[in-house]
Image 1 (cartoon, one colour):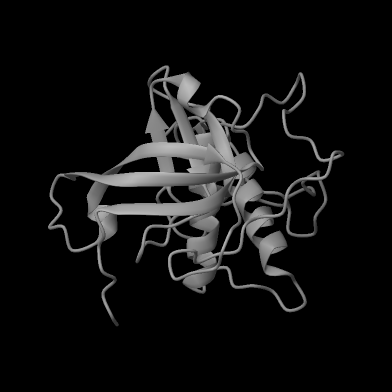
Image 2 (cartoon, rainbow, N blue to C red):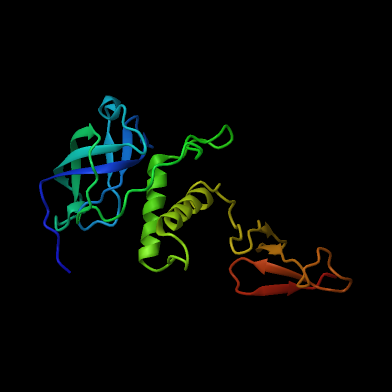
Length: 231
């Protein structure tokens, strides 16, 4: 594998894929469809002055110049991602040209009917979290953990995984202690101090037949533990 040469400055034209407020400050965070040489993840830029990115929205194309900054903690400087990168300039427009640095095609611009800002019961997505879910989706595909299904188009599969990670994992509420993630059931503490939840009868019925023992899923023990319903 050839190690990519690390330049002190890069200029590229790319699409803005996410933009919003930083989680822990009032500054902005913006994800673009471009990767540092040798990196698997799309570049995320940060700043404090909102006027710098005023007018640049998701789906817009921009020409950006970044300058190499300080070396990150516990990094040796072998890779471009070992450094912080400062945005020197950003200009609207430009033509996206395929190159070694552009490792993925830009995502298509949304149609007018596609929701972008959420609804009253669904707040707008967090750009930083959505970008992280997108990176995880691409990583899982590349590693073969969630490969592209036969007959599916790559961009659609990436977006589906990204949305599922965001809604079902990133935004999922915190479950109570002792929760059973295997059966999606809340465990309760028994008289002996253990935690478990009752299993449905094997025939799928809701009610237990007369004389049939109860079956429980017990925390910390493999398999099912059966208790006599008469005791």
